[in-house]
Amino acid sequence: MTYLETWRLRAEFARRLSGLYGTEVPAYATLVDVSQQVNGQVLAERGAGAERLGSIGRVTAERHGAIRVGTPAELAQVARIFGALGMSPTGFYDLRDAAPSPIPVVSTAFRPITAPELARNPFRVFVSLLVPEDRRFFDADLAERLNTFLSRRRLFPDELLALADSAEADGGLDTGRAARFLELAVGAFALSDAPVDRGWYQELEAVSSVAADIGGVTTTHINHLTPRVLDIDELYRQMTRRGIEMIDEIQGPPRWDGPDVLLRQTSFRALAEPRRLRDADGTVRPGELRVRFGEVEARGIALTTAGRSLYSALVAEVDRRHAESTSARRQDVARQVWSDHMPRTEQELAAGDLAFFTYEINSTRALDGVAPSAALSQLLADGWVVPRPVVYEDFLPRSAAGIFSSNLTGPGAVTDTGGGVHRDAEWMSDAIGRQVQEPTELYEAQRAESLRQVAAALDLDAIDLPGGVLT
Image (cartoon, rainbow, N blue to C red; front, side, top):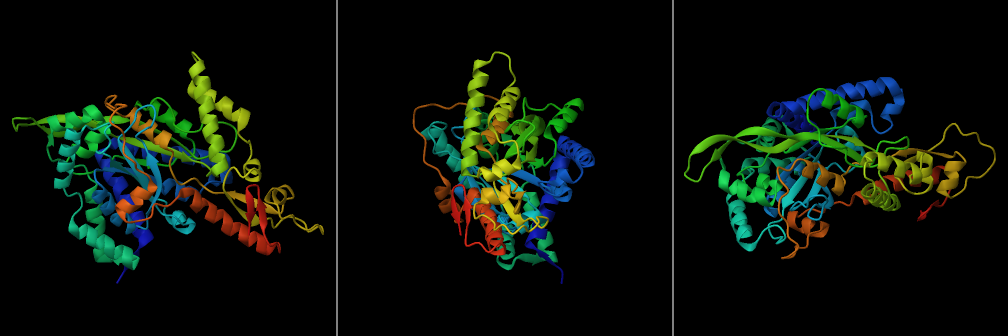
């Protein structure tokens, strides 16, 4: 009997979901094709350097998806499905205070959390949860009606959830049950052809088109899928030349001549898709909704807490300078700020404890009778160790909000009165019954393990990081 291990289930699910979305949104298939062409060009131009942040095989296969749900119970069910695929909730993102447009959701990302599993298949899904209790968006009457609507729907069949639980408990499924699980799981995220209540949808859309996409329909669906590209600026140009309307700018750090850090993202604009709409008199008429788009990303090096503080300070400086300028493009302003303040080499990022790396003994270093220092910065300077960048596997709240906002059908409505409601990673962990992982701790664990091995190889008791001693 053939058995599909967890990672193979994950890889097959990602492949099938990508095929489904390419059928539903043909522009996404174009996006994938252009991404692969650009990746091929970059690989030909840069050689092995193009694979510094991941092999071309991994980059080509890599995807992240996004879905939206309405209740903690639905989120808990999603967690069971992704648990079967070896994906854990990682990171907490609150988009309710995001600029330029607050969005009434909190989010987490389900992904593999160990380096070996990420290398096998790094599929991620960014899952957003509606917050009807937040009175800045929903008054008491609308929230009550919304919760009633959400309580009546069932997104995932019992058979799918039972198979998911078995897969998670056993580390996979036999061929027959795996095929059924994948069929049900992919089908659960397909766009439904069920009629949409026009009045109800429009009432929620006046608050936020994201709220309407979640609470205005009886099912969920894949909202966007995201391939990874090695040159996002070139992809943006090529997509535009093909006549596909892109959002106004690339989100995240600027393109510059130093190390790529964190995450850069862009997308083509949400497309008008034919949907059946039901009027108040019960008549069903053809119509269209504009909620789904295709996103693309370029991933960089994960930053430490100190590095994230520097990043935040640079973003604030870009905002300040851009606000004072009458004509400069934001990306041009950002490039200058990065050139002024961001370290220009990986070596500087590592020595300053600004980014995460794993470390290896430099096998080419000549033994000269000099004992190695216990300080990481000196080990780097003296050539005892070689840094390998840790890829940033997660998301940026501001960038996510920027993508969402660029694809909204209207400005939405949010008030400063009524008060919000507290949500954080601890709340989300309790709601879904699974610990939401802290990304920085995962990156730190990778670095720490590599440094323990280096310390042992160099006969050191401990290695001194700029921020403290790692034993």
